[in-house]
Amino acid sequence: MGIPNFVQLTWPTFLKGKEVVIANAIIAILTIGGQQLFSFFTFSCPCHVGQNLIYGLAFLGVPALILLVVGYALNNQTWRLVTGKRSPLQAEGTQNQLLQCKLTCFVLCSITGRALVAPVTWLAVTLINGSYYVCAMSEYVSVYYYGANPNITASDRKKILAAFPCSQLVPPELSRARDEVILLLRYQSQVAGWLLIAVVVITVFLSYCLASCFSPLSFLHFRYWTSYVHNEQELFDEATDQHSKLYAIQHIRKFFGFVPGSENVGEIRIPSLREWQAISGLAFLKLVDEEHYDYSLLHDWALKGLGGGGGNTIWSFYCAHKYYCG
Image (cartoon, rainbow, N blue to C red; front, side, top):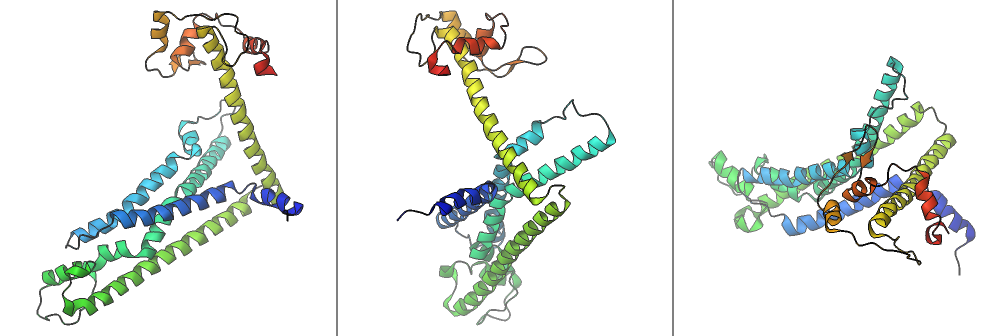
């Protein structure tokens, strides 16, 4: 029995425009799985005074910090914000500067929100798990365990409490006290984890509500704008890929004498040793003039003999080959 047509039409429509939500959900799921594997294979509490806290906080905070940095680095908006410059078409003025400042703050908040998904998920899952918190805070518990000598010193008491995460190091007469301490610490950790989740969910919800309230766009207008930006980016990426491919093929044809994939190869050329050396090695963007760059060594080599041909040269050449122009 096939899927009804209205269902087939509804799912794509429902998912369209929710790519960010889906991506965040995937990131959260991957973070949860990674945290479980990370805890299983690497975490082992030292059960020693002074080391438990450092070890536990390191496993709590360092992965979250790394995930935060990775979240910033993998977001294209980060690099747009870092490398972007104010458009010369914008007129100077206090109003434009204020608008630019507001836009920068909005984009920065959006980037931060996306980057916080993985680290917040890591912290919430590790706190609900409780093992890291138990290890870090065991020696600081203010609990008088059963069966202990009341005249015991504070340092000895800390040593005993620090050993509680490792059951094999706890004397039998203190097993009941150990269970009580572990339960207390797990309770604190899990409550903190659920509070973190609640605070994040409420904050995200209120942020969306405030953004919608202060937005000049209506609900349907906002959906249209989102769809336009998404489609524009897709088309721009396709055009960028096709344009750069055509431009690169022109330089490759100049070097080898033929176009890759062409059925009729009239002439090929053998590059000289000097030409091979000219396109080999390391290269970065080379400034040609105030507005243009050479993108590679092959690009630089090819342009030296082109004589600054016009933009129609690429299209007129490739339209002679049915393989590229259909």
